[in-house]
Image (cartoon, rainbow, N blue to C red):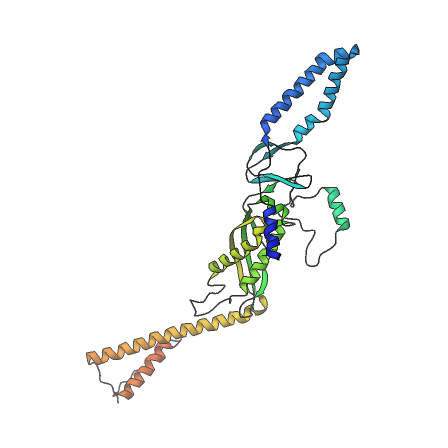
Length: 346
């Protein structure tokens, strides 16, 4: 069995299913009615019978104590409220019991435990974790998650992941700084809780990896090549590739990537000045090329109109001189200083 088979088996074992439940309002009303009945029975019948040491009074007292000591609280603990875009993931004695993903008021098995890997630990749990924690190189273990909460519910809202900018070499080996924003949500709560240790950290790591894998396949910019993809000129296409790459990695965690968008793209500081000079030189060359091309067209048009209108007849030497003068005037950065010839043309 290879690694891919193991991953598939894990996903199949942790498919989301609805947890067995009952209407919460019905159980609450039933609990209130039974509690009220036992309380009235105790104070109306039980207390008077206890004064005469009657067996029925002792039995009523026993029912009263047992009800308040166990069944009453069990029914209260089993009541769960699920708000929109929230979900409970339950385990029963270590096994996956089911999930509640639709908003409502429910009653579930009181012995189930709600699981949320993003839940902030209690004070004693945090103290114990810090006492046995082993520092990991390159990881800020004390940094809290953006979704840390005291709730045991899993959020299924659309959320935004904005990782730190990365320095990556593009296809040409130029170091660049790039950052992405990932829009995502949890669509399979069982996979999110049981298939990975911390699904937000897993998504963050996979986003960084996918970004690095895709960016190194493209150059930052390709001047004059409109058909060739580049990071600056084909950002939408590259963002789609990054999204698909992330989605293929986080499917095991029950996460859907809605959108991935490049929010920062620039040369690294150590080469930014040199690349700016290169871009300026390229822009100057392109501008000069356009100017010369236009000037040649204007000179050609001027010569054709002079010949057609028979304004003046020029030999090849004079045409060459005229072409030279017109190109100097049209291509120069400074205004031309005209010289008036009052004598003969020859």
